[in-house]
Image (cartoon, rainbow, N blue to C red; front, side):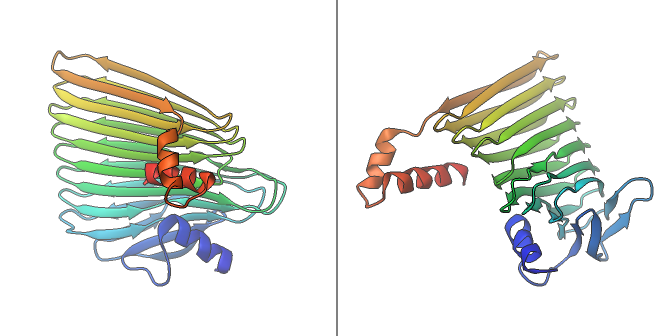
Length: 305
């Protein structure tokens, strides 16, 4: 790997030097490095491009890295990754995609990740997206995440779009069975003429299932963002959706909620707030010696932390 590769991996997956645990690194549509452990096996798919990740039951704690980097202009990469998490296993999965494009053709990565959690399994999943490069070719990322939570399992997701992604459509679908919990924290930053759409579809089928979805978004310049959440409560369950966005310049953000209760014991809540940076916050930071631009950047960074 060259310096560009290493910088991308550090940005999207905090990889800086040797890795512990299992990992699979994909570059320009091909796997280039892999390591398995006693509790985590990674197998290349034979029918489509992608991998199957198997975590043994009762695994106490494992870290798995599965980053993707794209440095070839004009490449359209599609990958299908399936995660099979054994009963009562606990695992921390770090994914993400970074695109470096110095040319004129568009570079694109579409990743489909499916998670199957057995009873009592616990997963923390972190996915970061990032684009860079001097070329006018677009950097396009379209992630799809599908989650199935069996009885008593839990999943925490953190999805972050750092910057530099020209176009993205992010789809997350989940089915929750009895006594399960899904927590999702989304953070998005767009600038220039970038476009980002997030679609969440959560189906709470199980008794005492719960979901918590939080989105923090900042749209600047002429960028556009769409947030769509669909929550279906089909049993005694609880779901809370919170979408907060800051807009600057000529940006536009749309938030569309849809909550459907099919049980009298379903408790579904949706909250949304979109606005500009408060002037008194800017003034307060300027009194500490920051310029107006620096003050706004500090507020945005704090909002997305």
